[in-house]
Amino acid sequence: MRMSPKSKEENKVALDLAAWLFNIVTSVGIIIVNKTLMASYGFTFATTLTGLHFAATTVMTLILKRHGYIQSSTLPVSDLVKFVLFANFSIVGMNVSLMWNSVGFYQIAKLSMIPVSCLLEIVLDRVRYSRDTKLSIVVVLLGVAICTVNDVSVNAKGFVAAVIAVWSTSLQQYFVHYLQRKHSIGSFNLLGHTAPPQAASLLLVGPFMDYWLTSKRVDAYNYTFSSTMFVGISCAIAIGTNLSQFICIGRFTAVSFQVLGHMKTILVLTLGFLFFGGEGLNLHVVVGMVIAVVGMVWYGHASSQPGGKERVSSPSSSNKLDEEAVALVKSNEPDGKV
Image 1 (cartoon, rainbow, N blue to C red):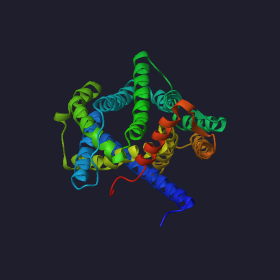
Image 2 (cartoon, rainbow, N blue to C red; image 1 turned 90 degrees about the vertical axis):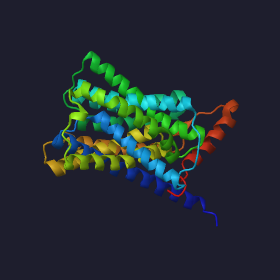
Image 3 (cartoon, helix red, strand yellow; image 1 turned 30 degrees about the vertical axis):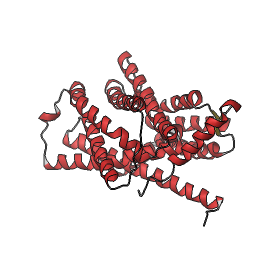
Image 4 (tube, rainbow, N blue to C red; image 1 turned 60 degrees about the vertical axis):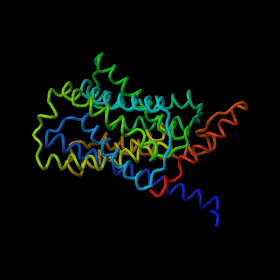
C-alpha cells in the first residue's frame, strides 16, 4: 500500500525532527563530558581526543558494515582527500583560533560561518534566498551574538587562524551534503569512507599539535581510572555526534545546519545556568536567547515557503539538476537496517 503525499510529508517531518534531536542531545552531551574531562582531569589534548573520536567511529562503521547494515559504495580518492583536508584544517584551526583569540572574537568567527556557508551555496549550488530568509538569518546572528560575544580583541595570527577555521569548517560541512548528493550515498556510507583517514591523520598529528598548543605531552599524562572512563564516554558520544552531523547536513544543507545549530548554543548556556549557577546568565543573555529563537523559528518558516530558498536552474542544465535531485532523495533515505 502506497503512502499518501500527506503521510510522506508527515513521515519526513518526523525523521527530520528525530535527526535534529539526535544531533542536539549528542552535541550537548559531548560538550559537557569534554568540559569535565579537561577542567576536572586536566586532559587538554583536544586534537588527539578528536582523533580518538574518529577511531571509535571507524570501529563502529566497520562493525555495521560487517553485519550488513552499511552497503558497499565507492568514493573517489580526490573527493576523499579534499574532505579530509577540510575537516582536519577545521579541527586544528578551531583549536588554534580559540588559543590565540579572545572568546568574543572566537564567537564572532563561529557566527561568520553562516554567511560563508550561504556564499558557498550561492556560488557553487546557485541557491537563491528570499528577503525574509536573509532577514531571519540576520536575526539569528544578532541574538546569538548578544548571548555569547563579550570582550573582542584580535591580533594578526589569531585573525589568520580564525579565517582558516571558518572557511575550512564551512567547506567541510558543504562537502558532506555535496558528496551525498553527487555520489548517491547515505550518511553511514560517507562516514565509513571518511572516518578512517581522519582518525589516522589526527592521531598522527594530534600529539604534536597538542604539545605545541599546551606544552604538555599526551603520553606523559597521568591516566587514572576516572579520566580514562571519561575519555571512553567522550568517544562513545562522539560516534553519535559524528553520525548525526552527517545525517543532519544531508537532510538540511550546511546553512540550515548552521542556523539550527545555534539552538545548541542556547541549550549549552541554559544547562550551564542550571548546573553551574547563574554566573553566565543575565538580562542581555536572556534577551539574546529570545531574539535567536525568534530568528530560528522565522528561518524555518521563511526557508520552507515557495521561493524562500531554491536552486536557480537553467534550461541547459535541467537534466543534470534532475539527476542531482534524484541523488539527493536517495541520500536522504534510511541507510539499510539502521
